[in-house]
Amino acid sequence: MPQAITKVAVNWITSLEQAISRRNRDQLRALFSDDSHWRNICGISWSFATISGGDRLVDELLRRCCEVGACGFELAPERHAPRMNTVAGDEVVEAVLKFQTNIGSCVGVVRFQQSAGNNSGLPKAWSLMTAIESIKGANTGSEPSPDELNHERSTTKTNWLDRRQFEQSYTDREPNVLIVGGGHAGITSAVELKQLGIDALIVDGMKRIGDNWRLRYHSLKLHNVTAVNHLPYMPFPETFPRYIPKDKVANWLESYVDHMDLNYWTKTRFEGATYDEASGRWTATLKQPGGKKRRVLPAHIIMATSISTTPSLPNIPTLGAYDGKVLHSSNFPGGEAWNGKHAVVFGTGTSGHDIAQELYANGAKVTMVQRSPTLIVNVEPSAQLYDGSYLDETKRTEDLDLFNTSVPMPLIRENHKIITRKVRELDKSILDGLERVGFELEFGEEGTGWPLKYRTRGGGYYFNAGCSELIAEQKIDLIQYRNIETFMSDGLQMQDGSAVPADLVVLATGYKGPSYVTQELFGDDVAERVGEVWNVNSETQELNNMWMRTRQPGLWFTGGSFSQCRIYSKYLARQIMAVEQGLLAK
Image 1 (spheres, rainbow, N blue to C red):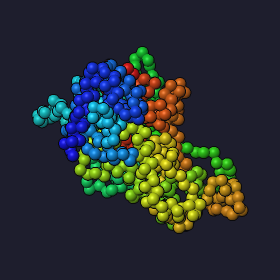
Image 2 (image 1 turned 90 degrees about the vertical axis):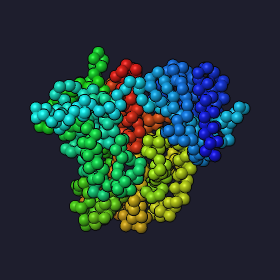
Image 3 (image 1 turned 30 degrees about the horizontal axis):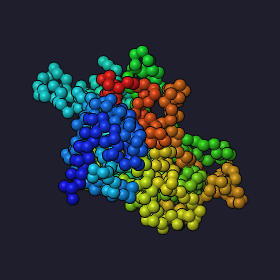
Image 4 (image 1 turned 30 degrees about the vertical axis):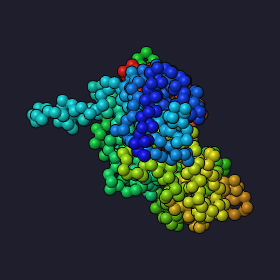
């Protein structure tokens, strides 16, 4: 079977090479099914886009291949041997290919349905993904510097620490890239830029690297398994727990920055920037400790402030009448101080559940307020099924990333519908228990589960780590927002006349999106020029303005999960390098 699969893949890729080299549209069209999809990640052209439909796909593929001189398509068995897999319920053959363009080296994944073939006996491709691997002449960061090869120990020379401190001071130069936000999104961008020899400075307002995790509520852990969350070039040790606690995440980020020699300024707030078209550089204002202002002139700014940055504080009528403590979930330090007290948590997403559970564990009497139906999925095993391929410890993370990014959005949707149906069966007991106490459930757009909810709105779900059982068993009370009559000085008055006392109100009401931050820091004109950031674009079938050029020259965005940042920071860095080399317009 492996030899037969390999032969099928080689024959198809050979035919692809022939059709493109001959510019033979009919021959190329015969290689794709009518419902095929091509996802391009800066491979053939610098776009992030998915094109669906055989005719449109082939026309665009052939045109762009001719523009960039795409050639030399061949199997890449060194990346991964062709294999059988099940995607969106269909048995498929998957194969990795490689090719060249006038820009550099590229890689791709082609996927065939077993049942689809053409008159020549070749299968028809169901999906194709193409992605940039390396740019011609690019510094990969793998060559040792002259200093690394110098073993002289003269006391008149500076040592490594001296040079690192001087490099980070930026007293002799401007950073080429300014990265705003020092969490995993900013850090992964910086390390990929460093690999290409591009000078990047990370700035973050926290006192210590990792504080964006370290200072969050006491019981927080990552909700997906460690294997999904590795950082580039330095994966988590095998000794790490299956779900990493927040303080361990924070400490790892801090050590990662040190080991990777990344330039990082803590206690530094980005106050905004203006762009000069003539020079092609930003004037960015940074506020440092003691109120000192510093201006830097980067060519590029990467906003890595997360898709969940600015707390969303909805207008809750009569909240002003309440005299107790009100906190947004982002400012909730832990539940220790609330033993024996009454707490009301507005919101039934992940933060709302986690905070309610922590308050309960610390002896508080907790009431949750549900404002809208919420998707609930057990952490084990259900939530992990959507990332199931990463649990295969026999495969490299780089190869798993390649196969996962090769699945276009239409197939992801179908795949997730199948998984969500299975998840609802696995979780039936707790879902039924929640509905019995009045908890309102939903399962994502057309039953696609939590990952697409994350891509569209960044929330609206909870990975159940025990709080759902507390609600179902009525150890944590539940009320619906629509049944609240008014706030009182000491709690809530319900429409049925009952009262809910509250010493603490926690607003787990989510965050404003990146577009709000863009407007606040760059002004209305830039925000309007960029447009929406995050959420799936119906035309390109990709996230809006993430990891790609925006309509504002020199302004880029990154964010999302650990795996998203690991995967896509590589492509963001290569686009910036292409701009620097004049291969790509800003």
